[in-house]
Amino acid sequence: MDTHVLARVIHVLAVVHWIGGVAMVTLVILPQMLRLPPADRIATFERIEGRFGAQAKLSTLAAGLSGLWMLWLTDGWALFRLASYWWLHLMVAVWAIFTLVLFVLEPLVLHRWFHQRATRDPEGAFVLVLRMHRVLLALSALAVAGAVQGAHGGLW
Image (tube, rainbow, N blue to C red; front, side):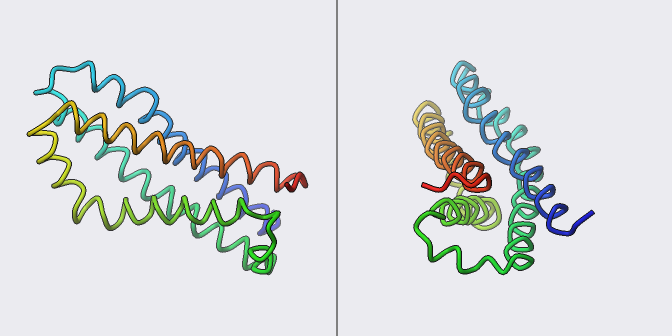
C-alpha cells in the first residue's frame, strides 16, 4: 500500500472515531445527563468521559500525526497560503483546540473546575458544557465538510 494512502486511511479513521465520539457526547449523552437527578450527573458523566477521553487522546494523536505525515509526504505546506484551502487551517485549529483541551486543560484545570462547578450548580455546569460541545462539534463538522470537498477538488 502506498504510504500516502495509509496515512489518509489512518487520518480518516482517527477523525471518524474522534469527531463521531464528540457527536455522540454532544447530541446524545449530555442531553441525557440533563434528565438525570443532579446527584447522579457528575459520577455518571465522569465515568463516561474518562473512558472516552482516553480513546479521544489516541484518536487526536493519530489524526495529528497522520495529517503531519500526509503534509510531509506531499510537501503540502504551501497549501496553507491559498485561501481556497481554508479548511486546512480549520482542521489544524480544531485539532489544536481538542489537543490542548484533552492533554493540557482537562487534566490540569477543567476536571477540577467542572467538578466544583457541577457540585455548586449542576444544571448550569452541564448546560455550559453542552454549549461548548455544540460549538466544537459545529466547527468540527465544518472542518470535515471542507476537507471532504477540498480533497475531491471542490475548492471554494
